Image (cartoon, rainbow, N blue to C red; front, side):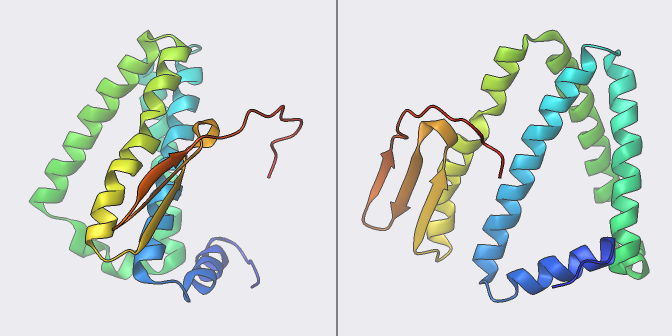
Length: 173
């Protein structure tokens, strides 16, 4: 699959996931989003040590706006954008903004180790979501938990496998 800019990326991702079930695509999208949220929050913590929280949130907003509009335009969704303008969407956006400001302020005041521990709750939340996926028809749920191992659940079994202790030389993938 060729890559030719943002539109090409969307086409490439669509082509690669077309053979997957809707559940599998949804799970992959949620895992990707969760990973990106963790990386973004960690980056915001690092940035907040150098600039005030308000400036960090403002800069994050500019980058997010440019990124989202690029995706909207590249994917051709610009023709449907008018459907997104509604009172509930405006209220959600205001709630998101308040949440981001509160979260960023909290990140700025906590030591990095505590922020890292808080951000690592995400895999545990995914584990809790395994039950929801099973209820929606997914047969087997396997969730990797990094150095904590992996979690498996289906309608008959659920268990956690601890990761072996290893000395990692290079973790680039």
